[in-house]
Length: 468
Image 1: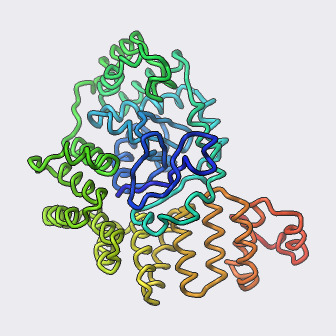
Image 2: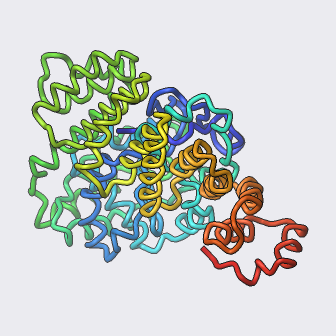
Image 3: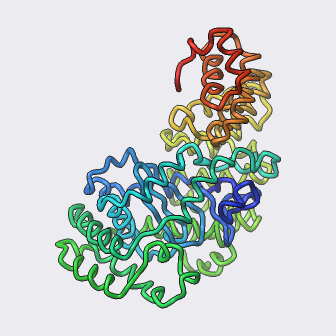
């Protein structure tokens, strides 16, 4: 299920770009003019499936690429070493998987063509520490919290680069050619990329301020579109259609996003007469977003009759129950989602969140264990650290709670708060334990003060501590 990272516009990032900050009570609702990094296992899986053959054909290890799903109605995308960003607006504007793959290939083409200035900026921003990795269910625990905007200071540099990205027409043409060649090597039709750019040919005549962000940084021209069309028509796979499976997944991805982002519109678009799975899925999500949980659950249960082994439906059911104060009932569907997809850390985070909310000692311990398992796969997941701190606090494990809070701020790129809580953790943890040494490491890598360094040197911790 889609869930947003903290909306960013009302936080300390306001000076960087107009982003959204206050946590809504329900998952994604990207503000009309806002941007949020969001996490969704299902959509990430579809995007990865679409992207992997392109990365492979370009000689890039797909496992090294972090795919960012950016909640915004803007039509945009970018690629940088180890990172690819896809805006929800781009997904919603694409008519089929091939069009989306074409844009991805074009972005990879910028890297293949050696356009490193932009990617260098992205790297310099230190993107990874600022990924606000949230899973389904997380927002219910954090909504309304005074900490909603905490730890975002470090993200300003990253988001600032989004507005600075831009290429020349010459670079665009080169990326077109590189992207077309990559698609050819991957055995994917280049028809989609030509169709997509032609679809937005009218942007060429708009004043820059009125264009989609993507076409401000990626200037279109009729000659460029025609040159690209001529190139991809030579592709041996030009007439190769999308597979039925890929088309269905693309529809599901769009329906899911529309259900979250524009629920009232989704209800109108996906009418009761449309009995397809994507339409029913969109309506279930839309009713949930419109605070009609009973109607949403009725639709979800009907979908589960048809697809009893779909982990994302169980995930959605658990989320609806949890967010509407039915945590006890949410446990079973969330357990089912994890059992069906044990390798998905976000699903474990959802389950962990529910378990620690039950105020049962055994459940809280199990919830903490689920969160720790998730963190072995995503050790920079800020939300998992925040929830783990809550679990430890409920268990009276003060030192571990402080350490987890330090990790939370460390993951958000807030070294000052990370250091403060790591120092507090050291006061409560047993000296020379792995946890104590980790707290020391956080202090050393989070701009320690001279007094901190003196204290650490006095006790010999600087010599003994290990790097992360």
